[in-house]
Amino acid sequence: MPPVTRTESESNSPYNQELRRQLISFSFYKVMPEWRRLPRAERDDHRREAAEVFRRWSNYSELRLITYSTVGLRSDSDLALWRICYSLECLQTMTSELLSTRLGGYLQTSYSYLSMTKRSQYQIGPEHESYDLRGTIKPGTFKYLFLFPMEKTKAWYALPFEERQRMVHDFIRIMDDFPRVRLNVMYSFGLDDQDFIVAIGSDYPEDVLDMVQQMREAESTGYNQRDTPVFTCQRTTIEEMLERLG
Image 1 (tube, helix red, strand yellow):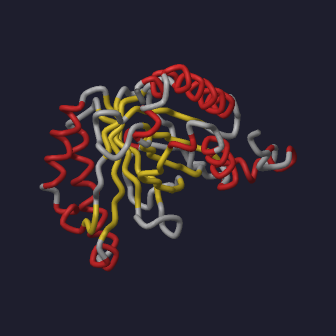
Image 2 (cartoon, helix red, strand yellow):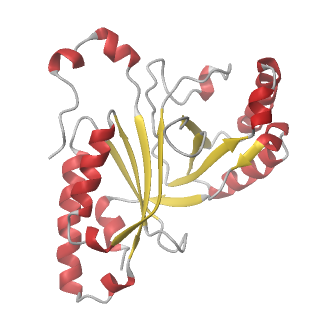
């Protein structure tokens, strides 16, 4: 069952509500080939059992679950989970329940990224804010998610803040030309290998391609140490995600 992460008194505390941040997890799973060789009826039973776990956690107030299919979009992943919650224990408990199912015995974790919301130190502008003053991310309802980890060079952090702010503004000006694209930046310092997780939502993959191509020419990208692998994910219902496994 989903864990209780805070007491009622803690939940009602205005101080905690104001400072509360969200943990963000992106997990990618690959189904072992052996699973697809099982009889169809057995695979359907596995799907129903896994769907029950997903649905139960979808109804848990402390966690937001968004499901994606990556079948045919990457060779090393079949499904992706975007989870937003408030404790590491919550993520661990849900993952444990999923892997304890019969389908879970055939799932391999291809990639897993952990991050947290944090208000940007740069002046970005309200039209580009992905989350409010409490550090609450607002995931869109876009059909596609484009995700990649990002690590900046040490030279970037050695630059004066004003210089970095100037380059961030140049970056934002490119985004302004693509109103059908939503970009979220989440922070991973000390939590995972990368510095940031960049999640781009859009119903128009062509806009994302054109925007990212222009961003490659921006001065700030010269300070990127790493910004791969790149994931293209299609949002689905829980049932659709499981059915597309084969």
